[in-house]
Length: 221
Ligand code: SAM
Image (cartoon, rainbow, N blue to C red; front, side, top):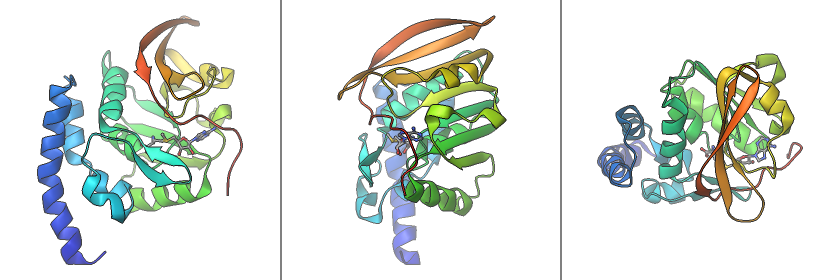
């Protein structure tokens, strides 16, 4: 992309980001810290150039390989829930995808560890985090069903692809007093569920209906 076009999108995106934050507020996002981060992260850089003009619509968009960048409302909502009681220090994300959710989290927590199973998406997000000079995201090309045992325990774990049931390895990698959030279920619609770990026991809550791509095993590419 040439510099003029990039600058043009940069200026437009500041205004459209402001509008997006306003819409998210109207839709029920209350946490000012989250709205502020949604105002700052340049979502147009996380989608293909051809879709950059739609980047600040409150909608999921294709990112190739049959995957999507999540809807901004869903990113904001999951982030809001994750930091509601206290800001976790270290977060594991399963499903880097475009890297947008990881970038939003990285603006709020000390460290984000994120796993992606599709090599092309993993490589694209690596390059983007470097370009944006985001230094507190660790990335791994791998199968999120296994989690990231050598980096565990995590204060919070967030899945952005839907498993039929949450893999036991992920519960094991959650620190005490931590929370795990996942869209669970097959088909097009799932339930967003949150588990709190307290003294080794897991307390489960259902938040709302959501729609995510399914979690798949193995590495692709
Ligand atoms: N968080 C992403 C973002 O902000 O763009 C949205 C991700 S997209 C809805 C879900 C991602 O999860 C896809 O990139 C998909 O390849 C990835 N995924 C699915 N199963 C996975 C697994 N077992 N391990 C790691 N990543 C997985």
